[in-house]
Length: 285
Image (cartoon, rainbow, N blue to C red; front, side, top):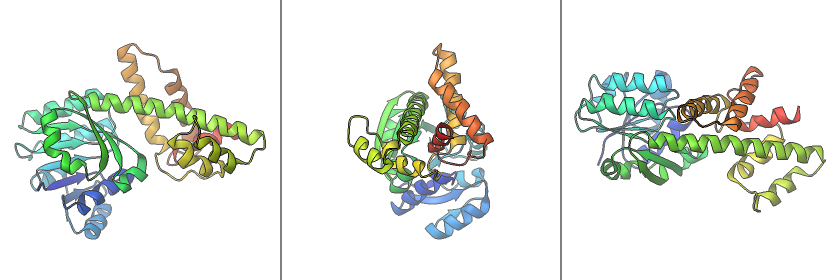
């Protein structure tokens, strides 16, 4: 049985940590906001570390879920000070492929394996343990730690070498931008036609144009509610990463760019911490 440490207890990390604890894996948690970590540690009956360095001495698998590339590298450099050889670090943050490769190289100097394993499924998936996980790194290491990851995800796919997990997540984020644009624009059109929105969402969700976003966010957005599932500010950050990766590969991403610009307007309007379905607000105002 692995002893697992969880670093990062945001909206996704809390659900992941809870599922790890329920499966009997979670040993220690760390969060930059200590009070949040204390409350969750008490609830789950696990230990709390006051620093990444402390956590690294207590576990043999470390799961990360933090917000930015800089945060990942800051945590990895801290872990490297005390981490034990043969520890496995699984990064479930959404960052660039370059950052994943940097983190892997830092930890390899300490005989530590690294997997970049970003996830999709939102807060609902994190809470239910039904995330989709796209993994880059050594396939044998993935199989070794798979039982831990299965506590958080019901779909785990090895993509390839280090960095390919994050590249796959970039594909997901670009596609998510397009779906958001299509659904919010279509529903704004439906509203302008004075159609019954609940019936529109119900019938279209069961047809060829149906999708998860329409099914789970359609009704709430048309009622002017945008409860945070995937925050505007986070998708904005992710799309900027996608654009940089696209620029490096010589690929234009006009839809991703337009969505990022829309999100900038939403953030100025105070919707940065709302769900990305708040894009509907721009379509109907």
